[in-house]
Amino acid sequence: MTKGTLHLISTPIGPPGPVLAPYIAELLSRIPYIIVENEKTCKRVLASIIGYDALNGKTFEVLDEHTKMETLPSLLEGLDRGTDGALLSEAGSPCVADPGAGLVALAHRRGIRVVPHPGPSSIIQALMASGLNGQRFLFEGYLPIKDGERRRRMVELEKLSLSQKMSVAFIETPYRIQTLMGALLVTLRADTQLCVASGLMTDEEWIYTDTVGRWKQKPPELPKNPTVFIFQG
Image (cartoon, rainbow, N blue to C red):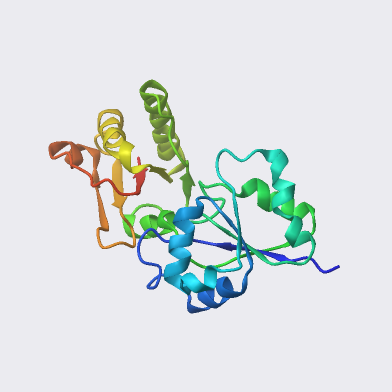
């Protein structure tokens, strides 16, 4: 039996129209089985792409940070039988600082074709616009939540950036970005370059790069939007 294909589709923070390839709408219209990080959010995004009527008859399953590894095989049962499926994150790219890597690894082991599709990636967009090293960089994901652990990790990453001549990127949730910004300004060296990229691909997009020393002269009040931070020592 021919197995289905698992399509990996990125989800924008803002309106999907300007940033999704036109063929994505056709693809999502015909795929009957969709694995989502947040069903309510993803249905709203899908409706804006393909219309609410096109959601009728589709099966939705949730894959989030609480999903247990032992339940992953059940998410692929339809694909094992030949049904195509799509994996969507709540925002951004599946498997990149978002759930999905375990499911994709299992799909490979079970002989299911995995197809990533072009789409929005705030990490790459921020790196492009930062003016920092896009040839050699490290994506750290999320820094530790506890202040002491977070600051120790910042120091380690700054030393790594200096020794390897590379940029370091990480992300944070909207309700913690102001705290993170404050920690960066008191922890990093004054001459370290820091880029803050907030609300990418939305009407509230804001991107700026400067030294930590100059950031400290006028600390910003950051909008509570998904934000990418990049620094280079």
